[in-house]
Length: 369
Image (cartoon, rainbow, N blue to C red; front, side, top):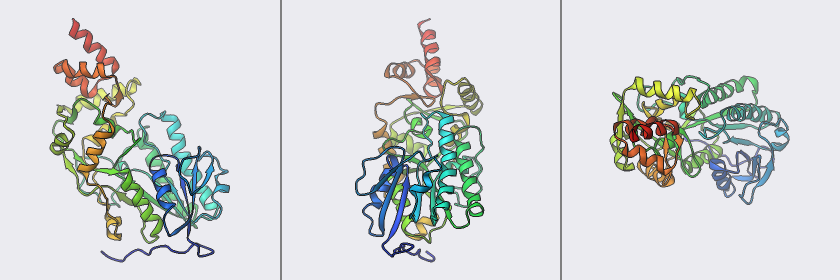
């Protein structure tokens, strides 16, 4: 197990406990973390920071755009900042998302240093390791970041990681820890990975062996709370359910069949559709439903943290969450188009995985002809 981390009990100045600021506190994992910290005996005050006030009681709300340099005034007296507002939401406008992601982290790091914050914890994603056929299972936290910047959310994440890596030189008085969760699942989570399970059938690239690992938002919030209150847990840190599921297990648990297609067809078609603006996901993001990127959470486990959910439980929660939703190639469609894709035969098999509303309409015209 090694050295046990020290539980933080004293605030910097008056011994009353930690003052913790959570950015992105109104929604998602930020909201869960804010609520948990509000009842943590080792935290004297929670500062909830977002561009709109949330519904968590018992905390101090400070409403501001997270890219505004005036953020420094909202962080006065804070000991720890947890930045949860990095978005990989597939429905967001890419340019706006990139600006908010990268500029937001720049602003949080600079403002935290200027306000005298001792620790900053930034939530990114294990996607930065890339998804590759030669990846060991599991990946070590110090494994190289092999994702390729491609103008998608991967570029945001890699730039954020670079900013955090440079922070000790830019802001020597503030320590920065990155937390990299596996595929996050939970209420309101909408990513290329969750939409993969909204398709009528699951895409499998011929010759590959996917390895599925998930991270429930409740586990991510609990891990962040653990890191806040244990200052000896250094990064980078990975978070996820133990182990992984094979493709057969995923199909059995999800109740969905599979469609096997050649890699050249899958990635070539996805690239063309994305370039035309028809599908929201870049072709590179299909690597994450094709090749392994399983992480170990070794450092958190050694410190005593454990996930509450296993991968099977998270997948079942995901299937409940997306019930009634339908997507083709990460693009949401209506029930009628889904039914057409499911009954159109061999052409429909392609549609079901890589189709779009445009492709579906063409397939329907072929059927009528």
